Amino acid sequence: MSAREILHFINGQYVPSASGKLFDDRSPVDNRVIARVHEAGRPEVDAAVAAARAALSGPWGRMPVAERAAMLYAVADGINRRFKDFLDAEVADTGKPVSLASHLDIPRGAANFKIFADTVKNVATEFFEMPTPDGAGAINYAIRVPKGVVAVVCPWNLPLLLMTWKVGPALACGNAVVVKPSEESPATAALLGEVMNEVGVPPGVYNVVHGFGPDSAGEFLTTHPDVDAITFTGETRTGSAILRAAASDIKASSMELGGKNPAIVFADADMNVALEATARSVFANCGQVCLGTERVYVERPIFDEFVKRLGDAARIMKPGRPEAEDTKIGPLISLEHREKVLSYYELARQEGATVVAGGGVPDMPDDLKQGAWVQPTVWTGLPETSRVVREEIFGPCCHVTPFDTEEEVIRLANDTPYGLAAAVHTTNLSRAHRVGAKLDVGICWVNSWFLRDLRTPFGGTKHSGIGREGGVHSLEFYTELRNVCIKL
Ligand code: NAD
Image (cartoon, rainbow, N blue to C red):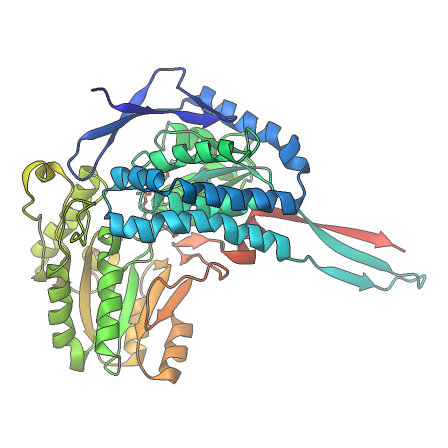
């Protein structure tokens, strides 16, 4: 049986690549080819951008906000109506446990349309009265207009969720989008085209082109002269390449990039809460969460107990088929990514780390042997200068370091080029506020992890990103604010 094909979605229609170029979409569970994906060349990217541009001057461009918002509610409902299709597609591409994708990826992927539909309906703009020399005065008011054609370039770790996190607000604000999903996880972005058509989103408002980054769809899209803005989530290095390309056209760019996030556990923390949250933040989605923890700092009096129990937590993360109820952890996204993660496992060993748990590849049965499995891993004993402690690995692993004082741990936590997220565990209220405010990150959790109110600002400092998305903050990126000054 030949594998099914995944096509581009341009101007409301599924189309193949004119070049006839296709690439394999493989399951990370067993490395089997699950689909063949059309790779966009410049002609497909041109067509998608032209369709998006044309949509802005069609019915979409004239649609009142309330109607647009209602349409986005219908998109969310459409995803939920086809929940199983989205779930199957996401799980096939990523290998993540069904239990995770059914609670996180798909429902949150749908919810992103509703939250931003609500936001645009309810946000006011500013108004100022001013005096003038003749005494008559003037008034100023701001209006929000869409940016125009927005390029949306996405990663593979939470494909639908992170894509709609951008497409939701972009469409709510009246833009048209061209999405370039990750080459590793093209299926749900493609499937969303069906929902857009089903609920009557006009052709050209939502387009999808498939392919890779450099010299492929990603580069063709982000360097396209008729794209007005780029919103990107992915690696810091890629973000930097896209920013360089965007500079020549002065394209507005929103960057959600990598992290090397710390978790800080004080001796006064509730041990069970701190352990549960930290284990989740290290191992969830096989460590492939940008907000995940890879550096853990534990106050010395509880260091040994914490390390032992975190190692125990790693050992009970049972790998297995996505649909099996007892599966606690899936594979990494690809064999290529596994090579990268295993290179850090090897480096940790060479540098003399104590391997508390894991450190290798689990013994998987049958066809699963071909998949991208790694063991959840906990290390201690490395210096802070080690590449294992400094570089983003993006796997189910962390290094645990003891500390003695609050000042010391703040310095250690901030000593990184990244600044995405942090978690602090303490029952001392003053300390929670004090430390939370001193960590140079976009989001700091206290006694929790991954608790997300979608109205709050989300983004990174330093090499973790530029700009904030979420709630009204997304409007700052997806609209242009114009001031009208009227002399009375
Ligand atoms: P990646 O940077 O390799 O790829 C992301 C996307 O960019 C893909 O669609 C890829 O095809 C495209 N791309 C690559 N090179 C390009 C180029 N030169 N021009 C245009 N497009 C290009 O990232 P990934 O491996 O898919 O995702 C993992 C990374 O994403 C990690 O670093 C993780 O921390 C980060 N991430 C960040 C956030 C956040 O919100 N800050 C969220 C999730 C993931």
